[in-house]
Length: 240
View 1 (cartoon, rainbow, N blue to C red):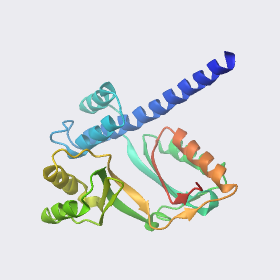
View 2 (cartoon, rainbow, N blue to C red):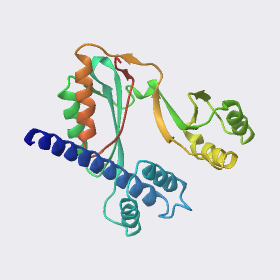
View 3 (cartoon, rainbow, N blue to C red):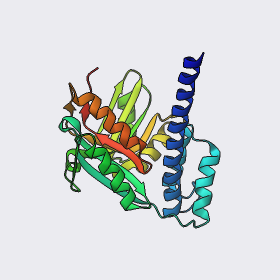
View 4 (cartoon, rainbow, N blue to C red):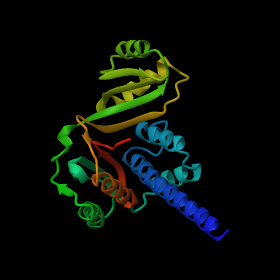
């Protein structure tokens, strides 16, 4: 029983750690969205979208409400975006987006992840030029042509609409996010977004093999353990 119990205990702690990271991430995102606009999702599209994403990932209501209440109370925290770019194991490109209230702490933690995995932290703009900044939506559906037609009617600048395995994926310039989402909801009132985000997608991928694979996984795990890291974008393709 001892080993089984230890395994279960480890799994519980791991799950709790993942949840804590997720709640912390959305707590900051919600706080910033409310602070930069108004703490009312009906009047703040960015806040409303962040709430929807949080609920999709099963973030509890009390976490959401606490973050918004903190913004209402003019709390002393002042999170700002910090972005780090560079090259990971195997020469893949990496972009790390953070929200921080302490630049020295954040850069120290991120640099440590690069250093301990043989990766190289680059200058601002060193790899970001090889990524496309896009609004990305995915939802159940089979008629990509109908979706494209509705987007054209709403004068949304669409990059691509694809349908695979009963799921439609729509991409547009990042600046078109709210316009595209409004048009989708208006055209398809019952739409259920699986993905609704502004993201960076690599223009070309880098296949990893050999020792680069476990080192890359270590690198990503280390970054995910950093408190201030919000998003990690990379062009690495791992063997199946």
